[in-house]
Image (cartoon, rainbow, N blue to C red; front, top):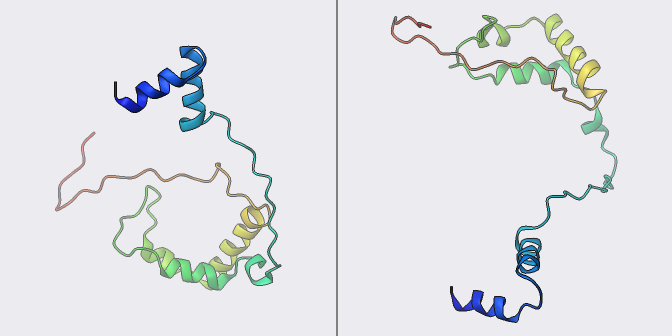
Length: 126
């Protein structure tokens, strides 16, 4: 046992269990997470609070990675980048109605599992 630990054990007034609990509380902390009682106190920013626009959806579609394979739905990034204005507007409206206005990104959103991609003419088995 090193000297620092010997000194701590020797000088502690209490049982071994109390020493362990004291050290745990001091250096590890408790398992309880204190609630966050902070509220936003900054000034209002109408630009940040505005709904998602068709132009923002278009910019996100154009920023899509051009080198990734389509998902299980078969939709390619080229398809996403070439959406019509009408579809971009519908996507923006959906995001505003179901996510932005509710201030929530639900866990019910569709999840796309990673897919293996055949390379060089090989076939996937399994």
